[in-house]
Length: 463
Ligand code: ARG
Image 1 (tube, rainbow, N blue to C red):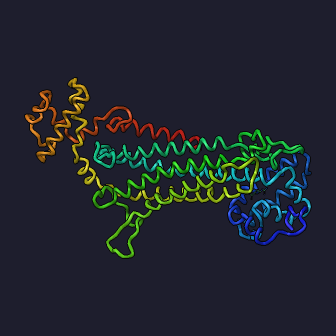
Image 2: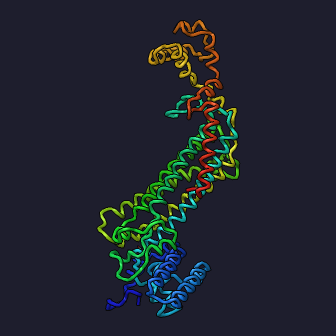
C-alpha cells in the first residue's frame, strides 16, 4: 500500500503505477530532495512540531539514505517518485518518527523546492563553464591582434576585420548569456517550501528560517503561485536556447572556416573524425553536433511552454513532465561547452589564407567613399562615384590597386596621389578607430574592457 493509500479500497493497477511513476527521471534530484527535507525538519523542530531527538534521528537517517543512494544501495525501482522513495526509505529505517517528516509539507512545494535547488546549482556550474569559454576566446583574441580576415555580410565579402575582433564578438555574446543566467538566478532564488499543497498551513512553521538555511534570499509571497508556476524553468531554458543559438553560430563559422575552399583554420586530429568510406576525410563533427543539438534545447523550451499552457491553478500532474526537458537541456549545454572549450584550444590559425581572402572583393570600397567624404563630397554622391569605379574595374578586369591616378581622376578630380595608401589592407583595418571598431587602438581598449569585466565577474562568483 502506498503512503497515500488510506482512502482507497483497492491498490493501484500495475499499468497506472508504471505510467505515473517518474522515478527514473527524478531520481537525479535525490540530493536536493534530502537537502530540502533536512531544512524542513529543522523548521518543524523550531516550530516545536517535532522534538530535538526526533529531528536528530530524521536528519542522521536522511544523510545515511543520501550516502546509500549515491552508492546505489537503495532500491528505487517501483517507487512513484523520488520524494516518495526517500520518505518510504526513511520510514522503513526509523518507523513512526519518519512518518512525521511530511508534516506541513506537500510534494507540490517539495518538487518546486527541489527543482529550484537543482537549477541554482546548475546555473552556477554553467556560469563557470561560460566564464572559461570566454577566457579562451579572449586568449585567442589577445594572441592574434595582427591577423586580418575578410568580414562578411550575406556571406559576401564586406570589409576586412581583425580576427581578434571576430572572436571578441562572440565573447560579448557569451557575456550576455552569462548575465542572463545570473538574472534567472536572482529571480528564482525564492523559497517555495511551506506553501504545502496550495494553501499554506495552520501549523507554526518559520519559513524565513528555512529560507536562510537553504540560502534563499526570499520566501514566496503566495502559496498558490509557488506550487503552480514553472516560469523559472522556462526562463532558464529560454536563456539556454539563446546560449545554444550563439554556440551554434560559432560552430557554423568553424564548419565554414575548416572547409577546404576557406582553410582559415585547422582543427587538430584528436578533435575531428573521419569517414567510414572516404579515407581522405577529416570532419568537424564536434561542432556539427553542437549545432545539431541546439534543436533539442529549443524543443525542450517549447515542450515545457506547451505543458504549462492553459493549466488551471494550482498543481497539475502534467507538470511532472517538466523534468526531462530541464535535465536534458542542462546535460547538453554542459557537454557542449566543455568540449567547445577544448576544441578552441586545439585549432591552428592559417593567417596566410585569411589575408589572401581579405585582399579580395574590393574590400576598400567604403574607405574610398570615406576619402571623398573627407573632401566634403556628400556621402550619397561619394557612394555613387565609388560604385562606378567598381563597375569600371569589373568591366576591365581590374582591381582598385591596378588603376592609375588618372583613371581615378576621371571619376573625381578630388582623388590625389595619397589615395593608394588608403587601399592598403592594414591601413583599411587599423584605421577603424571609432570606439567598438576593428581598429588597432579600439581593439586594445576592447580587450582591456573584456578583461576588466571577467575580473569583476570572477569576484562575484561568475554570476
Ligand atoms: N512527482 C511529482 C512531480 O514531479 C511530484 C508532485 C506530485 N504531486 C501530486 N499531487 N501528485 O510533479
